[in-house]
Image (cartoon, rainbow, N blue to C red; front, side):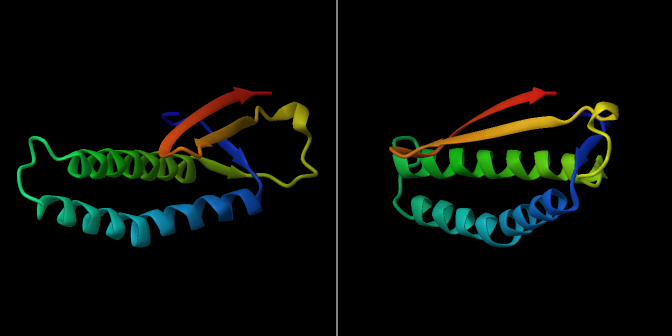
Length: 110
């Protein structure tokens, strides 16, 4: 996604910015608390809570970087714009109920 234009409506752009703000200002702080609580349990070499918190941190930081790139390269289009001229990216995020921290993302262009 490096320097590739990301076409999005104003509503979609606002959603990206809101998600980014939530991750940076709320979720990131929650992850810090999770890490602190897990560290307080002692031995980190066999601490599943610490491993889970680190995994959650990696996912959050990865998503933040992804959103920053999308926002930086966003080109806002109106829904009335000719779709023939634009290559739009469709993204579907799947989250598994039994594994709340696991995500799969499918991307496609049309």
